[in-house]
Amino acid sequence: MIKVFKTDIDSLIQADLVKNSLLVKFPDFRIDFDRILRVEGTCFRAEEISVCLKEHGFTCIDLPIDLS
Image (cartoon, rainbow, N blue to C red):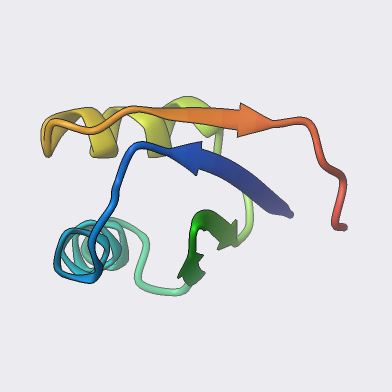
């Protein structure tokens, strides 16, 4: 499953912080950040990603794009 999110993260430092935090929670996932956040993994909900970003003070919107 691949999910794509629009976020309010605007710097590479912030993006790395969030990416590392997500990888701690989801170590087997592939996470890419290039203006949008792409998360590839098995059995996860968009809400789990949203909660992680909120913990760091950011927001995200799950974009309805099917990349599977």
